[in-house]
Length: 410
Length: 212
Image (cartoon, rainbow over all chains, first blue to last red; front, side, top):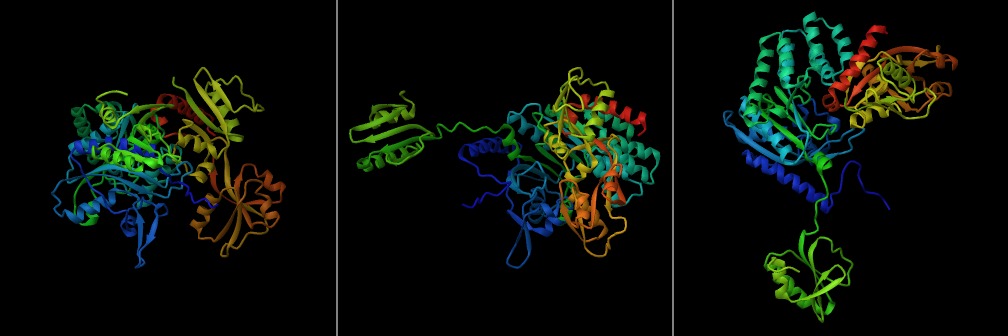
């Protein structure tokens, strides 16, 4: 027999799916509570649209070819298509838009330890507001989701892409040099950063400052103080001012204790332009959610509108907190009948369904799992019975209804 | 202190790294070079050291099975793990080299065959140079490949050059210096910052003192 199973994708069984539904419900509730409208973009879009963002590696996209020979890709990222949709439909750059989504992301991941080729992501995008209250709200939504899901030891690391960009201001570096520095800082690769910066034509002051950025993380007060001392110009100061205002907003929400700083976060997804953040929980070795400001992305779709948002990896959440849901009582009734009692059994089933009880029915000659029913009702020639472990308790339709409604007990 | 779990690449790197850790003040009662044990505890500092095969070190660390790891740069370039690469320890130093027969420098304008344990590093190198290659991935005794005519040249790490010499080969070109790195899991660096910082500080002071 041929094994048709594809590495990196998964079948979801009944209990697991219930687990996903529970997580999705929590997440959707939080999005709704904060006023985000659910939307959905198509599963595939033109390759060219994603190709403009250099950070989404072309090797990681699943490609399709339409009948005209145009290349399309299965959604490798949710933000870019939502940004396109917002720009297509809402042309006024002043208009504020708040969207939420839960959707599948497809990525061919070549990492040794991550085998998922598709995963479910939830997220929100907030367009048209560049104020700190907007970043604050986004982070508050993220924290609320983690808290409502019952996760412990959660924290959000906040970084600021504009801080490093400010440091680059006025230094004569090529794009690829900046890219290399970004990469070394992002990986906190201090040894190689030292070597690389040593080869560049930069002042000692800038050299020293850049070397400090990778380790500029930790509690808010500490790191903010250290970062202030490193400021060499107005744009670095302004970048910190923004982080400070966002922190103040989060204090009003009462969520400031979940915030740490990490100025070593750089602009990994090419579109991030300002405040960036990642969320962690339960000492899990990977971030569960990540997001940030992408003020320049919408411009590429013709509407110059600031934006921020984040995505939360629901498949990963399922790994962390997913448990098989108790599905014992998923359905109300299973009717098992003796072959000759078919018509009685069918009318009983109709009656129960009319009363909105989920009712399954099957001839008792078949092998059939009885796991997920509150009651198993046996319709036989000599009467009807409720099956209770190995016992058969005689009953009548009327009495059974009362039991179902909870009016009397078994 | 919280427990700190460090994965070391078995062999050359582990021996040097354990020596470094002992110099930092760690005490591994049950450690000896000959021992076949794979896990050692330092009860004083709450450090657990696990010996694993070198390509597995980045995997352990990325997955969080170990908080930190010590492994050669060659492995990090080949395996490309999502970890922080904090300190260049300057131990286990060697070079990534192109090697072959002294009198047979291949014609790089034509397609060449390369035997190596490092297909990714080899591909990156020759792609950058615009050289066409067939890469043969081998798992050891790479020196044999040119001798038995399996490949024109090899790409491998060379420490003293002795193995090459004994097999009649020479280094054509050293293209990348390699040394051991301290890597950490991205979350552990934050959740166990004090512990990791202690290791970094201790190691860095040694690295600088010896000036290796």
